[in-house]
Length: 102
Image (cartoon, rainbow, N blue to C red):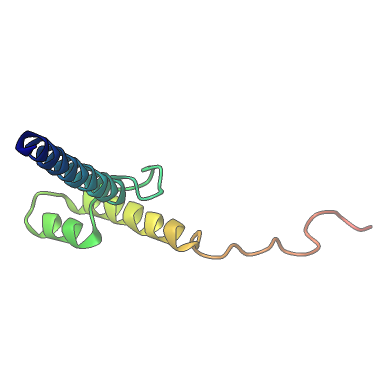
């Protein structure tokens, strides 16, 4: 009967280890999903850089002013898209400019 207890104990330990492994895997998947797949298709993002990181690269001389400005515009546009704004509001066309009345 002692042999059955040992086998049962080893089964319980193996199941517990498997549950821990599955929980760790699920946590890893969730972390990766938040980190890399945040609901955006990735278009328009400046290789995942934040504005602060871009400023630091520019200050360190690892990025030219032109590169910084382009990357900054991309980051700002992506942030505006995520926030639901599509940039500055477009003005409606001027009234009466379509046809000549005469």
